[in-house]
Structures are given as structure tokens and as C-alpha cells.
Length: 268
Ligand SMILES: Nc1ncnc2c1ncn2[C@@H]1O[C@H](COP(=O)(O)OP(=O)(O)OP(=O)(O)O)[C@@H](O)[C@H]1O
Ligand SMILES: [Mg+2]
Image 1 (cartoon, helix red, strand yellow):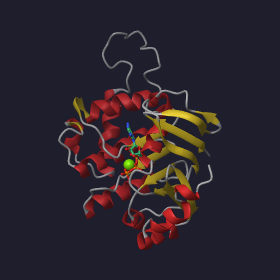
Image 2 (image 1 turned 90 degrees about the vertical axis):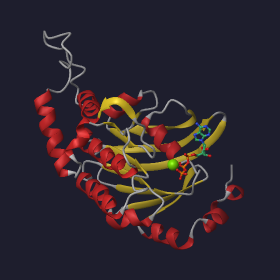
Image 3 (image 1 turned 180 degrees about the vertical axis):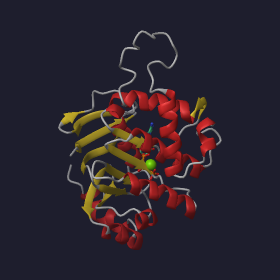
């Protein structure tokens, strides 16, 4: 069992404090939904866990199995089992989905760290063998309902919103992370794509993996049943409960959260 622990995390960007003491624990086997108003800092938290260099941590820690990841580069964090599906995935023209995934998978599975066994200098000799990789990619594209033509397309280049989100699920299926953070992976999806994405999440929600699902809407949670739902407000988690919390938010909005946990209610 693995544990991702966020402890009293304070972080700022451009001298503005965005995260103000986040506490959150995610264990393998758990699905934890994080809901909160626009601008409350949810994506900032996701970026910080993944190791985005833009943010400055002034207090607190992010630990995987008791070990701080704050000093790790993003690729080391990926190796440590952290995966982030971005709210706005960027296009990488010139890099195909297949090439990108082969490199990423080779890094995570340790191929790139091995000596090239006398074949040094041969391009790709420190990557997962092509045939093996292709087979796995094809199998997973089938399993996760991603059209095979996507393997050849440039990563996210000209992808529709829904296609980007499906591709993120495929990435997750290939990288097999311990902790998957999905930032609004349900936004902009039509009904069928929402099913494809949530089926993918359900397939990957094994006892060995923890999910942090950042979402604004109950509708994803109709398909993916969370164990916990936390409310994120003003740069911290203000409340954690079961699925009923999401229903309550859907019904009542965030007005009462502000009254109860608004800035004036926070004792600094
Ligand atoms: N690089 C940056 N420069 C300046 N401000 C930033 C930067 N990144 C984030 N912020 C600010 O931090 C706050 C939190 O942003 P964040 O994207 O984390 O919110 P969010 O909870 O994910 O919102 P949404 O639900 O709209 O996605 C916002 O006010 C945002 O403008
Ligand atoms: Mg966001």
C-alpha cells in the first residue's frame, strides 16, 4: 500500500499565496474527489504535486510513503508513481503519441537508466523494445477505446477536447502510476466520451492505485464512485466527507461554504 500525503502545504506564485495550508491524504485503492470554486487553487495543488517549477513552497510537505518529493524533478516524481492529467493538455507538434509514450514508459520502467548493452549510439536502444511497446500500446488502445490512428498523430495537436482527455487516460494506462491526479478530466466531454473516460478510470482504479479527481460536477461521480469528497476553498481543504458532499454542493452551491469557511472565518 502506498500513501500520498499533503501536509500543511503553503505555496505561492509571483509572491501571491495560493495554497494556504492544504492537508490531504490519498491511499492506494482510494478515489478522492476534490471540488471547489474557480480560482480556489485546485490546479495549483495538482501542479505542485507533479513538480511544476513555477510555484514556491513556503511551508509544509508532499510525501510519498513518508518520503518528501519536493526536491524531485517532475520526471523523478513520475518515476515515483505520480501522474497528472492536465486540465489543459498542451499540444506537442512533432512528437507523436506513440513516440511520446514510448519515451515516457521507458523512463518510468527504468529502460533509459540501463546501459545500452554494446549498442550505444543506436537510436532507441535505451528505450522499451519497439515490438513489445507496440503490442502493449495497441492492446491498451483497444481496451481503452482510443482510435488506433491516434498513435501516429502529434500529441494533442488539433485534438478535440474530448480526444485530449481520452489520450490522458491512455497515458495513464501505459504509465501505470501509483497516484493519478486528474484535473477536470470530465470537462467538455459529451455523454459518450464521459463514459469512455470514466470506464477507463474505473478499469484503472485497482487496489494498487489512488485517484484524486478534481471536478466541478456531480455527473462524473455518477460513473466513478468516490470514497471521499473534499471541498477545496480559499487555498485549502475545508471539509471532507463521503459522496453526499458532492450532492450537497450540487444542490446548495458554494455560498454556504463561503459563510462558514470564508476568509473572515479563517483564523490565521
Ligand atoms: N502563474 C500564475 N501567475 C499568477 N497567478 C496564478 C498563476 N497560477 C495560478 N494563479 C492564480 O492562482 C489562483 C488559483 O488558480 P488555480 O488554477 O489553481 O484554480 P482552480 O481551483 O484550478 O480553478 P478552476 O476551477 O477555474 O480550474 C487563481 O487566482 C490564479 O489566477
Ligand atoms: Mg483548475
